[in-house]
Image 1 (cartoon, rainbow, N blue to C red):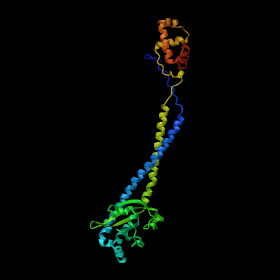
Image 2 (cartoon, helix red, strand yellow):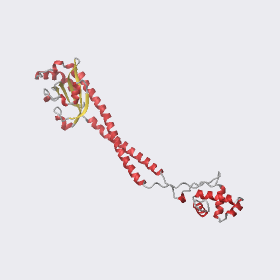
Image 3 (cartoon, rainbow, N blue to C red):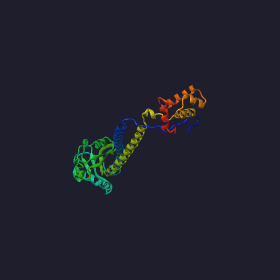
Amino acid sequence: MAGGGGLTLGVRHRRTEPGWGVRSVAVSAAAALAAVLLAIGIERTLDHYLSGILLSQVTARAIDHVEVGVAPHVSPLDFQPPYTTDKLNDIDTRVDVILARAREDGSGIIRVNLFARDGTVLYSDLASLRGRMISPLTDTLVRGALAGSPGAALVSLDNPETDDLLADYGSALEASAPLIVNGEVVGVYELFQDPAPINALRAPVWGTAAMLGVAFFVLVRVAVRQLLRLRTTPAPKPRRLVESNLTRREIQVLDLLAQGCTYRSIGDRLVISEETVRTHVKSILHKFGEPNRAGAVAAARRAGLLT
C-alpha cells in the first residue's frame, strides 16, 4: 500500500555469483587441510604438555631416591676404582633394601642403575649388570646428570642395560639424577619407569584433537558458505527494480497510463499540467528501468501494483 509519500515493492531477488560451486569446493578443501593441521598441532601441544608433567614427576622421583635411599648409604670411596666383587657386594647390601622398596609392585619402576663417573655399574636390580662398564657418553641424560643436571625423557629400551626389557615394554620413561656426596658429583642414579601412563594419554589426546579439528572445519565451512551466499550479482534489468518508491501521484498517473489515457487526459483528470504528467512518467520509467510507458505498465502489473 502507499504511504509516507512512497511505496515499497516486494523483496530483492538475489542470485549467487557464477563459480560459487568451485569456490565452495576450494574452501572446503582448504578448511579440511586447516582442520587437519590444527588437530595435529593440538595433539602435539597436549602431548608435550602432559608428557612434560609425567617426566617432571619421574625426575622428582629419581631425585627423591637419591636423597633418601642412596646418598645416605654410600661414600666417595664407593665410586673410586678398583671395583672389586667385595666392594660391589657391599654397596648392594647397603642400598638394595632401600631401592627394593622403591621397586615394589605397583611402583611402575622397571629398572634402576647406579653408575660411577666412568660408567661402571655399581648397582642394578639386574645383577648381571653389576661391575660392567657402560659408556656414559652414549646417554644424553646420564651426561647431563654427571654435569649436575637431573632430567627425564621417553626413550627406547634397545641399549645394553635395558635390552632385556625391550620385548615387554618397547620404551620407558628414563630419569637420571646426579649423586652428590660432600658437594661433588660422584655418580649417577638412573631409573626406568613403565611408559603406560603416557601411552594411556594418547588415545584421549588424539580424540580431543580430532573433535576440535572437526568442530573447526564445520564452523569454517558454515561461515564461508554464508559469506558466499551473501555475495550477489545485479539482477536482470526487468527485475532489478524490486524496491520502487512511487509517490501517490505517480501511482495515479501509472493507473491512468494503464487505462490508455493520454498525457493531456491524465492532466485534465488530475488537474495538473501536461508537462507535469510527462515529468511523472519520466520518473516512473526511471524507477522501473523501462524505456517506455508500455514496459512500465507491464512491470507494474508483474509487481502487483495494477490489477
